[in-house]
Amino acid sequence: MNLSPKRQQGLTLISLVFVLGFIGVFVLLTLKIVPIYLDHGKVKSALEALKATPDLATKGEFEIRDSLSKRFNINYVYDVKQDDITVIKHGNYVKVDIEYETVVKLFGNLSALAEFHDTIEVGQE
Image 1 (cartoon, helix red, strand yellow):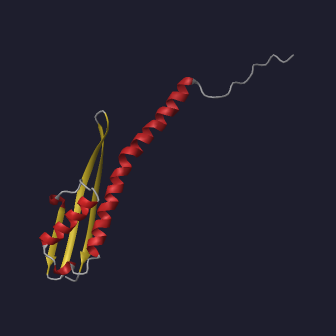
Image 2 (tube, rainbow, N blue to C red):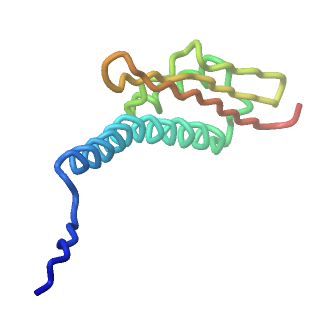
């Protein structure tokens, strides 16, 4: 007769709750932060489309801002404001600089801040 105690295997209820909570926090972070980077991809694609515009160097600052604003409205980008866009124009040289930040509330009083800075340059100075 074997009297040695049987070895127990598996998770206890407390460790299972801990593991599920840990996974839940990462899922919450993913669901809150991934859309920020998806929107940033839309901002970058709008800048690249603007850079591909054939007559960009001949456009004025208002036309460039208006073109970006329309592209942002089409793609539902609301984090970039007009104050975040800087347009520098010297002759045939155009530099468009977008610097913005996004704050997303995670839970309670905890938030996540993401800062982005993108630039395109077209023409010769």
